[in-house]
Picture 1 (cartoon, rainbow, N blue to C red):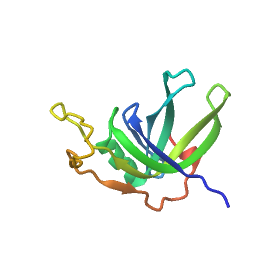
Picture 2 (picture 1 turned 90 degrees about the vertical axis):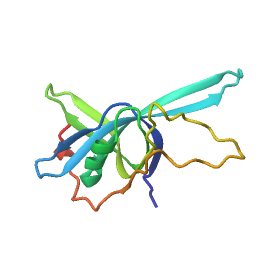
Picture 3 (picture 1 turned 90 degrees about the horizontal axis):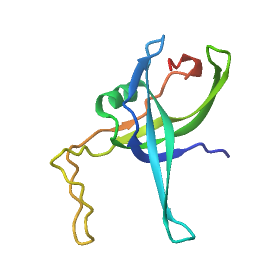
Length: 149
Protein backbone atom coordinates (compact mmCIF):
# COMPACT_ATOMS: atom_id res chain seq x y z
CA UNK A 1 0.00 0.00 0.00
CA UNK A 2 1.26 3.51 -0.83
CA UNK A 3 0.39 6.85 0.71
CA UNK A 4 1.18 10.37 -0.49
CA UNK A 5 -0.32 12.75 2.09
CA UNK A 6 0.91 16.10 3.40
CA UNK A 7 -0.39 18.32 6.22
CA UNK A 8 1.05 21.83 6.54
CA UNK A 9 0.30 24.78 8.78
CA UNK A 10 2.20 27.88 7.81
CA UNK A 11 2.12 31.42 6.50
CA UNK A 12 1.90 32.55 2.90
CA UNK A 13 5.22 33.90 1.61
CA UNK A 14 3.61 35.66 -1.36
CA UNK A 15 0.17 36.59 -2.65
CA UNK A 16 -1.88 34.00 -4.53
CA UNK A 17 -1.23 33.89 -8.29
CA UNK A 18 -4.49 32.91 -10.04
CA UNK A 19 -4.45 31.83 -13.69
CA UNK A 20 -6.70 29.95 -16.09
CA UNK A 21 -5.66 26.97 -18.21
CA UNK A 22 -6.46 26.95 -21.94
CA UNK A 23 -9.45 24.71 -21.13
CA UNK A 24 -10.84 27.35 -18.72
CA UNK A 25 -9.97 25.67 -15.42
CA UNK A 26 -8.72 27.93 -12.61
CA UNK A 27 -5.35 27.15 -11.07
CA UNK A 28 -3.53 29.10 -8.38
CA UNK A 29 -0.11 28.88 -6.83
CA UNK A 30 1.46 30.44 -3.75
CA UNK A 31 4.24 29.78 -1.28
CA UNK A 32 3.96 28.69 2.34
CA UNK A 33 6.69 28.79 4.99
CA UNK A 34 6.74 26.39 7.93
CA UNK A 35 9.01 26.65 10.95
CA UNK A 36 10.56 24.01 13.17
CA UNK A 37 11.98 24.98 16.56
CA UNK A 38 14.02 22.73 18.84
CA UNK A 39 16.72 22.84 21.49
CA UNK A 40 20.09 21.58 20.25
CA UNK A 41 22.62 19.48 22.15
CA UNK A 42 24.33 22.66 23.32
CA UNK A 43 21.06 23.84 24.94
CA UNK A 44 20.58 26.63 22.42
CA UNK A 45 17.26 27.20 20.70
CA UNK A 46 17.46 26.26 17.01
CA UNK A 47 15.06 27.22 14.21
CA UNK A 48 14.66 25.97 10.67
CA UNK A 49 12.32 27.28 7.99
CA UNK A 50 11.07 25.27 5.01
CA UNK A 51 9.44 26.82 1.94
CA UNK A 52 6.72 24.95 0.05
CA UNK A 53 5.15 25.55 -3.38
CA UNK A 54 1.37 25.08 -3.27
CA UNK A 55 -0.89 24.48 -6.30
CA UNK A 56 -4.69 24.68 -6.03
CA UNK A 57 -7.24 23.82 -8.74
CA UNK A 58 -10.83 24.79 -9.55
CA UNK A 59 -13.19 26.75 -7.31
CA UNK A 60 -10.79 26.32 -4.39
CA UNK A 61 -8.15 28.26 -6.40
CA UNK A 62 -10.59 31.13 -6.91
CA UNK A 63 -11.48 31.24 -3.20
CA UNK A 64 -7.81 31.20 -2.21
CA UNK A 65 -7.21 34.14 -4.53
CA UNK A 66 -10.13 35.98 -2.91
CA UNK A 67 -9.35 35.30 0.78
CA UNK A 68 -5.60 34.68 1.10
CA UNK A 69 -2.71 37.13 0.99
CA UNK A 70 0.94 37.20 1.98
CA UNK A 71 1.39 36.57 5.72
CA UNK A 72 -1.94 34.80 6.27
CA UNK A 73 -2.00 31.55 8.24
CA UNK A 74 -3.29 28.51 6.36
CA UNK A 75 -3.75 24.77 6.96
CA UNK A 76 -3.23 22.65 3.85
CA UNK A 77 -3.92 18.99 3.26
CA UNK A 78 -2.66 17.58 0.00
CA UNK A 79 -0.15 15.43 -1.85
CA UNK A 80 3.39 15.89 -3.14
CA UNK A 81 4.11 16.04 -6.86
CA UNK A 82 7.42 16.65 -8.61
CA UNK A 83 7.31 17.69 -12.24
CA UNK A 84 10.03 18.35 -14.80
CA UNK A 85 10.15 20.43 -17.98
CA UNK A 86 12.59 22.16 -20.27
CA UNK A 87 12.78 25.94 -20.06
CA UNK A 88 13.17 28.32 -23.01
CA UNK A 89 16.96 27.88 -22.86
CA UNK A 90 16.70 24.09 -23.09
CA UNK A 91 17.64 23.61 -19.42
CA UNK A 92 15.88 20.83 -17.52
CA UNK A 93 13.87 22.26 -14.61
CA UNK A 94 12.33 20.39 -11.69
CA UNK A 95 9.79 21.65 -9.16
CA UNK A 96 8.31 19.89 -6.15
CA UNK A 97 4.81 21.06 -5.26
CA UNK A 98 2.03 20.33 -2.81
CA UNK A 99 -1.26 19.80 -4.66
CA UNK A 100 -3.85 21.08 -2.19
CA UNK A 101 -6.92 18.90 -1.64
CA UNK A 102 -8.34 20.66 1.45
CA UNK A 103 -7.58 24.13 2.79
CA UNK A 104 -8.60 25.90 5.98
CA UNK A 105 -7.92 29.60 6.32
CA UNK A 106 -6.52 30.86 9.60
CA UNK A 107 -8.14 33.76 11.46
CA UNK A 108 -7.75 37.28 10.17
CA UNK A 109 -6.11 39.55 12.66
CA UNK A 110 -6.56 43.29 12.47
CA UNK A 111 -4.41 46.04 13.96
CA UNK A 112 -6.80 46.17 16.94
CA UNK A 113 -6.71 42.38 17.46
CA UNK A 114 -3.99 41.22 19.79
CA UNK A 115 -2.76 37.65 19.36
CA UNK A 116 -3.12 36.23 22.87
CA UNK A 117 -2.06 32.80 24.09
CA UNK A 118 -4.80 31.59 26.45
CA UNK A 119 -3.96 30.32 29.92
CA UNK A 120 -5.16 26.86 30.94
CA UNK A 121 -8.08 28.34 32.87
CA UNK A 122 -9.25 30.50 29.93
CA UNK A 123 -11.46 29.33 27.12
CA UNK A 124 -10.37 29.95 23.54
CA UNK A 125 -12.05 32.95 21.97
CA UNK A 126 -13.78 32.70 18.62
CA UNK A 127 -11.76 33.85 15.60
CA UNK A 128 -12.28 37.41 14.38
CA UNK A 129 -14.02 36.16 11.24
CA UNK A 130 -15.50 32.80 10.36
CA UNK A 131 -13.85 31.54 7.19
CA UNK A 132 -14.88 28.70 4.89
CA UNK A 133 -13.30 25.24 4.89
CA UNK A 134 -12.49 24.30 1.33
CA UNK A 135 -12.58 20.78 0.00
CA UNK A 136 -11.38 19.76 -3.41
CA UNK A 137 -13.99 19.17 -6.05
CA UNK A 138 -13.51 16.19 -8.31
CA UNK A 139 -11.14 17.84 -10.80
CA UNK A 140 -10.84 17.12 -14.44
CA UNK A 141 -7.80 15.02 -15.26
CA UNK A 142 -4.82 17.15 -14.23
CA UNK A 143 -2.28 17.76 -16.93
CA UNK A 144 1.00 19.17 -15.59
CA UNK A 145 1.77 20.65 -19.02
CA UNK A 146 -1.44 22.73 -18.76
CA UNK A 147 -0.17 24.67 -15.74
CA UNK A 148 0.49 28.17 -17.03
CA UNK A 149 3.41 28.90 -14.64
